[in-house]
Length: 155
Image (cartoon, rainbow, N blue to C red; front, side, top):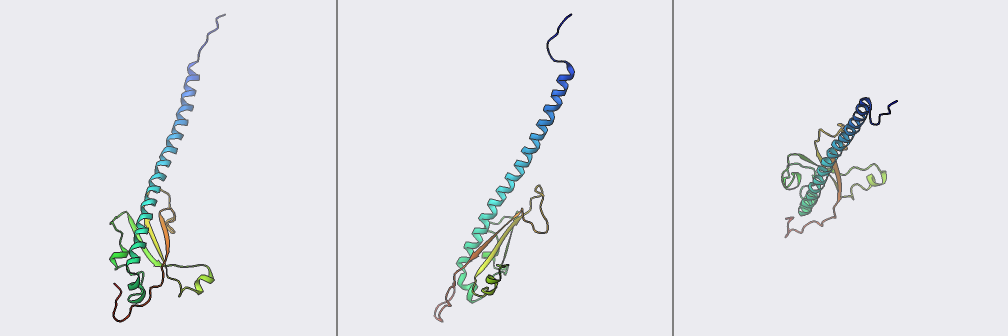
């Protein structure tokens, strides 16, 4: 009786199939990782755009509080547009909204503005109604600037 050592063809084929399935799973995980890394990059850029909009609002704070109190007018190019211009992102500005009744009762005393920067990333499954994965929301609280005297202006 002859005893042969080694692998049969069936054993080799089964191991190749198992290795192939495992490698396909790893490739899928790597693809998902790259998608979320790209979304994280967009998130970081959106934060920079939002912070820039908040800083631009500071320069005209007196004007917004005493001359034109509509903080959400999108025609105010120095605040309402992204600088530098980036067509991948959209900036939204609105008065802050609160769910807490204590904060709502003091709404006239609050000078909070919500800045929302959103982007479209078709590779990330997103709740289209709320756009939660592809947006950031920053709430800025501004100090009260006293009204200018007749001899000075809000510049």
